[in-house]
Image (tube, rainbow, N blue to C red; front, side, top):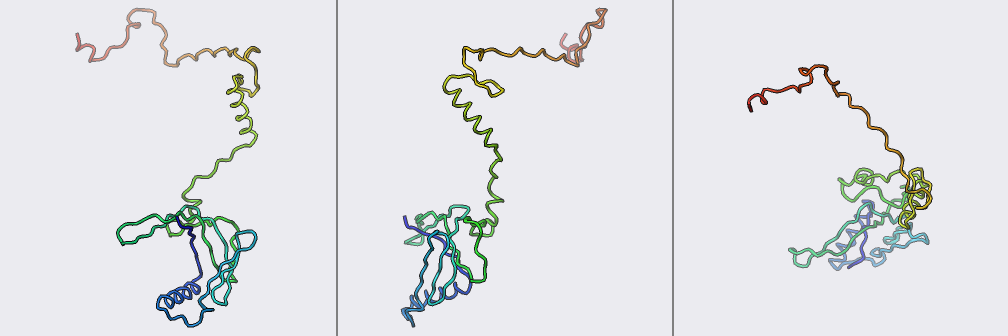
Length: 197
């Protein structure tokens, strides 16, 4: 698999690169210094400089919110996957501000605008103490020690197998009082009960 990345440049730089590519394809490069491209990064690995000819532009390496697959073809009918692309080098003008985060919040196409917020579920707000306590209880259960509901761990012989008394069932609100005479005690009959006889 090839190693690939996305190179996003301002419109003026894109025109210059396109002009250089057309000249090199035609074999008529006027000045070799104007045709040089260079990309170098600083020690942090996220910020750097993009050089085209004798012009330099600030660049940033950003993580994409999704993995993009790239394909190539040799015969215009069959596509072969070439790489998974997860990063983008964003070249900007000197006056443009540097990105604050290492992850680019948009995708590459208009439907993926603000992809992280719109397409993915937010991470749940978990209490670290609760997670630690549950993890500790699970480990205790795996070792054969019973755990009470109130988060105190007890051994099997120390009353851990005692159960709470079950609460008495609540009376049903629809329950009818037994009738004094037999006429009222007989259940109601429907018309379909009469037709069966």
